[in-house]
Image 1: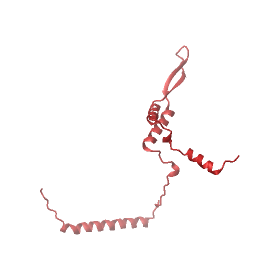
Image 2: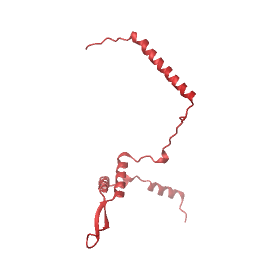
Image 3: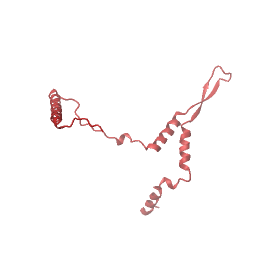
Image 4: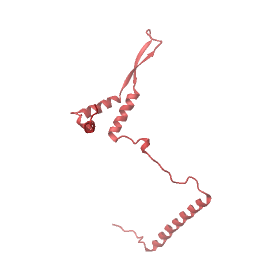
Length: 135
């Protein structure tokens, strides 16, 4: 039997409930403590020791996979999830090479702008009050 369309929209609205509806008391604090514990995660590793009579020894080593995921989730919780590569768009409209004539034009226009600035400064000096004031 096929369900009516109205029933499916009601069901989808129920699925879109906010996560805060499911959290109780100190769930967030417990989750953060669990992630902090994950930063210290270790795993038991087995290795063969020829000096021991039984030959097999166990040792605790850092579990870098668990530590990595805990650190990543803590940082995402604190700072927000970083942008994915698909969301980043970079366009470079600048020209990589320039002809000698273009370089000379840029130098001349820079020199012309610098000359205007220097001339304005020099012309404003006679009008400026250069005396020192003691307060």
